[in-house]
Length: 154
Image 1 (cartoon, rainbow, N blue to C red):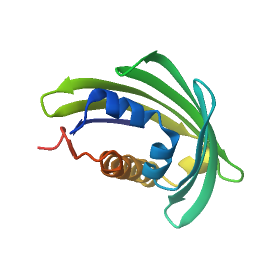
Image 2: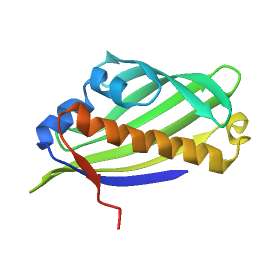
Image 3: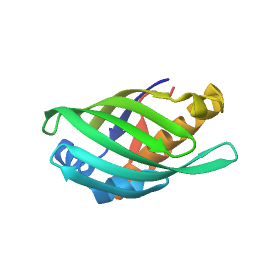
Image 4: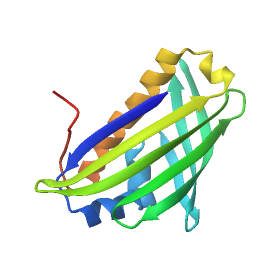
């Protein structure tokens, strides 16, 4: 599955960057996230509750930041696992650019799930992932006292 987005956030690029690297901000913005912490300068551990259709479960995962250019870009790759349901992995390329209205945050992401998760169907899994992404951006701007809007909407 592939996802992409572009959001105009009414805050400086530095402020957006700092928030993207603040585990408390991230935890508060990621739906279902109960733990997010740096375990090394470029590695995070996270725990989040996920719902696929009628089934709820908890994912534990690791994330690694690479290709970091401060206040401009990083790549994020991770893997999560939930005992009986299996695992998923994904990566995202996140970049920031100045704009007269603040900062444009762009991302391209892709992910794949083990067969146990895939058995829920691509539509259910895709809608769930897209819902997490949408709710993240709704919360993110508010968490830093800014507003945001998608630049992909017509």
